[in-house]
Image (cartoon, rainbow, N blue to C red):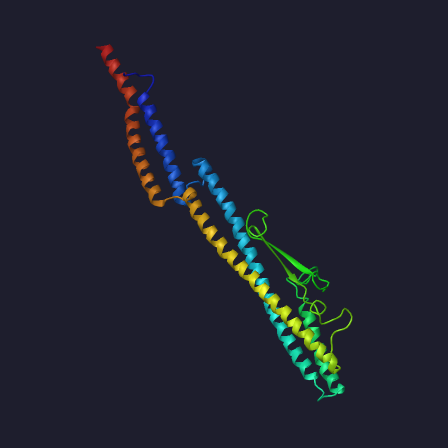
Length: 292
């Protein structure tokens, strides 16, 4: 049917041009940003899933950072413990030297001077802190130095609050002189007499065993932190791959789509120009017929 007042062909052509233009705009934006959901209206569902994946990845990545910080702290504590173990070894040597009747109490008094300085070093090691804040507590025990007390650490490594999976908790026992049995609450052990030196040997031996157990525990905690970082890294990589399938643009595909829509647009433009002349041509035809 041929009509003059309503140019149906032109309207259909405009519709095709608008569709191709929109598709070209989407492909062009995808090519320039690398994302096919840079405008969420292009694909709301994929944009929503992508945001969810990104949120999960951010949390797990921060969990890895938390675990790395904890591992660094544990490494520092392990080295601190090793130093304490070395000091205890020297104390054991002095106690052994004093536990003989070849030397006299006057000589033991001189040995005791070094002995007490080394005990003070052990106590200073037990006061190590993480960070420079004046409000920080020592990382062993509850800060009082009392035996049997723990400094509790809680490390968030994933979503949620489940201990052992989302959060890793452990405690560091006090390693003060009191906690190690090298001070009775009032006085340090000493080697001023042979009997005292003999008792000191036993106390230091027990302290070395205790320190060795703590070093082993710290090593296990650090291994747990390292393993957590590895697991989280694998999880983030998997999520990144899944997220990419929802939000990242396939450059080759978008280029093909853009070129295809561009060809359609050019064809529609040609048709539009031709259709725009149809009413005029029909009007001329009608006028010619009427005059005839």
